[in-house]
Image 1: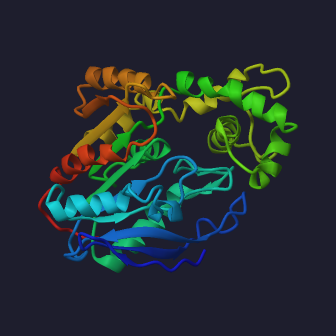
Image 2: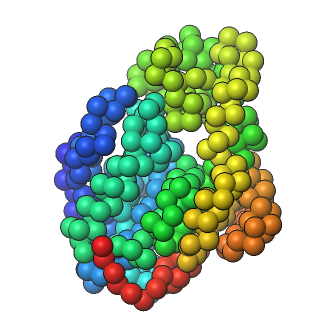
Length: 345
């Protein structure tokens, strides 16, 4: 979609957007836009030769939301980064927030016949376009980081694409699906029952006066199914991991979800090899995470230790929401790990 925005922040950084028309998203199964505006933050010193930090938003996040303020007195993330840059707390870099949302709430930053080719769009179109336009990033100079589903995307994109990113960070990223997703399935069932079934709920969601916890669980389960267990022949375009009428778990479907769990991906030698190529890996989660992602991270941490795979892992006093302050821990660590070379490919 067309979107014009430019703002000089207090520390001198310029917030704007990069409009990109994606061939990979043309004709996507959900009919979502292929022309999108992707927020950018360029430091006062300019972009040339700087690293590129790709920041992935969580489920239901989207481009315009990145630039909005939730409160008159609170910083949004671009403002926070601008303040850190001005204070010298983080090295200069260019920041890009890809708009990879879908009408179901999110794409999990992967290619799926249920949602579209978002991984291909991001890695083969958008990032190269940003690097060419701004003269930043390139081999050895790309960082990917995100929170929640964005943290999941940062981690799994790195695991699937060896050498593409030099450093990766995940704040409360999805993992341990057998615990985290099951916590929301009962609410998803209650949501679908309230609105007349999954299809009826999906048809009504854009007209609802508010989206509460119940509705969030309902749309999240549908979105994850579109990403992890797509089936173009099914009425919803995906196979659900549970029976909406009885609540019976479809284990043969959930097994397909588990194939995308970072915990299971660690069982694949090529994914482990990809993580070994990183110059830095940062992972954290709150001890009161509402989706139990701290327990998924503890399991992940134990497996990294078994593999002798280095990572900086932290558990903080907090929950799943209001995590922007965690970037103040991850960004200095990730950016300081990059080589001094300024190669742009």
